[in-house]
Image (cartoon, rainbow, N blue to C red):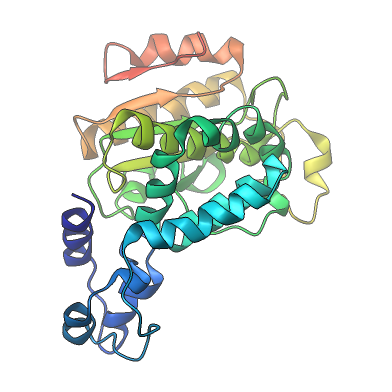
Length: 275
């Protein structure tokens, strides 16, 4: 259940007192806001840190559903949903599952394409991992240890061919985030055991090299050989850390997508639904 998943997540997070109590307010996988009962508030040291009312999840979801209904613009709906995810993962999926048909075009295509174009300009919060060729090569297994939870599925992109928009570099992170949201809401994956990953392999979109806001390396894309070696290291690191994890390769440039899948398909559990 969502509450059991939150309890296990809380056990895995060790903070020093008095900051310990704030993980239930600030960590989106643990936050329940006014859904915390009076007894839970007392035992967790949350009394006085929340409004006094105790609410059911449906009541809280209704507030966000009302905001979404009042907003006609799909891109702004996307921003609302991403803000909700940053605040409360459980509530995010409560809203998404309940309104899946209406919100699928918001969290994924066609809206996610525009969101990716503006990804570096959005107010962002943490979601997923960024693995960069220019700083993490040779240490990917070590970098993965910074993600402290078990993972059942990874959706990973290098941003090389985002939808029909071409090379978006690290702006492509919106694609793994959106796919993961659909796999949880529509496929039943545990929301604490999923991981969107952006591989930073550079970009050939020269406007990003001079952008003040671009979030990746402002360098040309690495060579075919460098890319192949980087992907091989990533796949091996994932297989070693999470042996049963499914890897989905998403929106790689076509000329590299086939070779990436061919190199990995007999070594780890993986697929690419683009090809």
